[in-house]
Length: 198
Ligand code: SF4
Ligand code: SF4
Image (cartoon, rainbow, N blue to C red; front, side, top):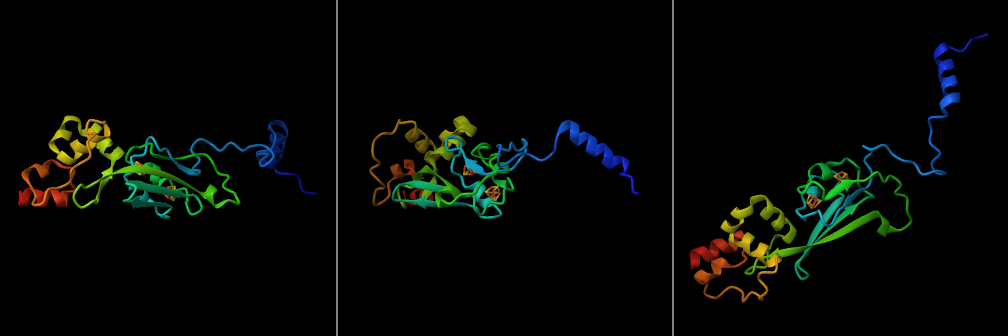
């Protein structure tokens, strides 16, 4: 007859006293530990729309497009292809724009439950209508560089527009370009042209 080893005997007695290690999920909600990497979620008020998270995502689970007609940047995180690596959270420009939750139960029959979409207002060049940056990103930069903001015309104008100090609709760029056009919201390429031509 074989006797149980001491270690197994100790485990058996421990299980009798403290109960089994396994959880009662799905009959009782399971609480993952604090550092668990679950569904990443955008926090719209804290995200500035810079797309850094999309660029570092190894699974390409974060997609973004610019809708120039609506002047919106659309960011989309797809939980069906996310690998929960946490790179988006670790490299987020605003630090708290996207965070991994402890939400692990992704089972669903509805496609719309498998992604989250947020939108950011865009600043466009007054001349060529190219995207300069989202307003929130410009405000983020403005808060970092403070008074140095006034050394960059486009940053300053976008900041003042966002704060409601520039309410008038822009008259657009003059043709031929005038010296005054250098004080418009322009992308770097159009600003160079305006400087050379005026
Ligand atoms: S956790 Fe990883 S895979 Fe998922 S969205 Fe973030 S970077 Fe992409
Ligand atoms: S602020 Fe963070 S969450 Fe928002 S787009 Fe940039 S990196 Fe992504």
